[in-house]
Image 1 (spheres, rainbow, N blue to C red):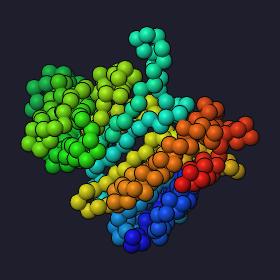
Image 2 (image 1 turned 90 degrees about the horizontal axis):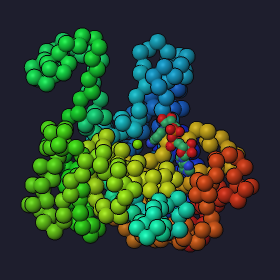
Image 3 (image 1 turned 180 degrees about the vertical axis):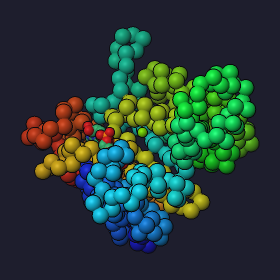
Length: 398
Ligand code: NAI
Ligand code: MG
């Protein structure tokens, strides 16, 4: 195995704690790499006026693979207030480095798997027909289009004259909004392109095929959002017909899907959606398998081979300064496993996942979230595992 270089992006808050423990787990699994740390996050916004410095972009460009902890983001006004004095009044505006990374590298495929670990006390349970308790086994992978749609940033309040004029050419706009003064109108667009839609659909179908999922579900709202959702579903039908006849294509509406989430989550396999609905449905499924301590993700561009692997959770600032870190590192460790899959180290990823599964099934080592405790600094004294204890337990299984 040739040794590769991985860019580590600890970011803010608990990002470093979960990332450091993850690197120990990778090492214990026999993964050999050089790590080079990239600067990202709030600290660099405050000091340099840029949470995603150019040098970090260069590093990722060069090495292609990054493991990312989490960052802190704050609203516009708070961001301006915390900026170093020498940088104020320069017109610097904070923008999320995560969105920045996605756009710069066109990381348009976001993948969020949600798998039940046996023995996880946070697993969703429901009542069965006989009144008994059932614990459905969730094995879902969500493919979320990561760059377009409602999060594409094309939006206005009191839209410019030309935009307004264009809107006024639409009969429905005239009928529903034509009498409202322009200044009282805010518009956020939902733009889907054929190219990006096809890429996310193909990624979903390819994954279903490679890993033996029987269905791909398009989770949108084509009966109402006819143009964008409608286009995605139509393209999915064409792609399925032409290349994936063995995989069933299902179609759910996002609202109904959230209702069915607790009814039959075990029925779903691969789910594909646009940016916002993908975000929503992946948080929904993550809740069934243990929540933020377990939710992992990958964002990548299959053409360039650039990938950023990160837990879904944020920097949890209130836990960042505890003398002993108490947060669950599993979401970050799982994200590293996705990295290993991506760089064709699948057996190593499987080995780590097995070790994680064994620790959870055994039930002896559990972080505070798994014990349903409030995250106070004394949880370790009360019997919860620290971030390091959990990593140690996983390492001992390796
Ligand atoms: P958060 O995900 O940081 O924390 C929410 C709560 O979830 C925590 O208070 C904690 O109770 C729990 N939690 C999070 N990670 C956990 C872990 N590994 N183990 C156990 N429990 C865990 O979200 P919050 O508080 O809304 O945001 C904090 C900061 O993080 C904000 O500045 C926000 O903008 C940023 N953020 C960054 C993200 C990223 O880097 N991808 C994603 C979400 C939020
Ligand atoms: Mg989210």
